[in-house]
Image (cartoon, rainbow, N blue to C red):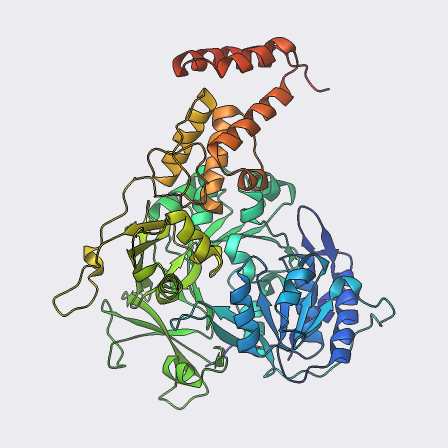
Length: 632
């Protein structure tokens, strides 16, 4: 029985009502820009009229824009025009974005001046029209369009990793988006809330948009985690939404208790939550804040939540995903499609009328994954492919995948798609990809490869090839070359027999060069600890060694502790070797010196032995502290 009832039938109706209530409040604010509800509405209305003038029938509209004001305005404009959109990520490889445009049938691409050049490469020689939103005609009316849009109309197509080697599009309607944004009453989200989405969880804008809450996104890839604490305090954030791995790294940087008095909800989604994460929450956050373990999928939205406060006792390492949400029942099915009993393992299936209609232009896959309700209701059943166990009290435990799909940093990956990309490289004859953990919750992809010929390709060469094929989160961190892949007695690949990755430095095309100075040695040690690799050379690229933006935040935090220098994420990724970062650190330290004696001391440290340097460094830091003039 459905309990969700909305007086609105379209997303644009909700937005226009909120504009009347809160015209001058921020709908979105980032470190560099801000947008009010009124400005959003007026710009979106002009862009919607431009979209209608171009006129592309029933085809979706591709959005080739970075996260922020532009894509938010474009989403609202497309929906106001009665159209539906497919988001593209400019950071993803050109070939992947072109495939999505072709598969979706998009005949119009919205982009901006920053991404115009790349967008032209995807327009298939003019077959897809381009609209540069930075050149919008100011003479177009900014008044509401007053179109009647039914709740059954399509709202978007979201592409996720696909088992066939290509991404697949998940379709959503106006009704499913409205239910996901307005149907969850647990946290009473309102216009008084200020929501920060950190990392991949920032993809869902409708939770804030449809409730009138302000969205204050934090881009972990560009901004790191060092400044997130100040951001939450300064902007008086009430809800923090992120994947558990981001929360884990963020909370480990905190050294105080109850730092965020306005924060009332921490919503973790996309990965397993561990008891150690709960301990971090209990240690650093106020009693007025709850921690929520959320289970969701692109096809169904959120369907289970476990709410944790300071008194909640966690009795196992992995935290349960909790209890049912309104309009989303959960069934556990065996291989024959029959429900299993309490405390038995089965495939998690979501029963609801607010599921995705299915996969874009994939009727057979839709039929296999979305089932009709055998009781004859208007609800359907989505088979998630996840395994679970239901306890007697109705609490659900999530036990992982039943197939070769995984989640890394909250993003869904079909291992077969990664394997297919590897096998498209002529130098590789066989490939298997698995997922490993550096520590609980810190998952990364490992590729096992059999070279097609000698000499075998360098790991750097393989990584560069993969970066041209797949988004960064799908590129394996570690590569292991084998003469043959291990097989089971019946001839299948024996994944359990694959060797675990060790701490060996990968076979890069950059020759090994040992650290020379105190700074380089200290940096190399930090990289080795974070990456789990021995013998890091000063010219080795952080990314080539298997690093990513989340691991980079750990390195930046460690450098801040070691050198008292705060390196921006962008600067780190632009100078991703020990040698180059060593120069940046020395330059930053030199820039902070207030007298010549300290400068001479630091320059001299670089020529000393490691033991002497530690002593001199402490003396120099004391001298710097004693001679600094306080700021009035």
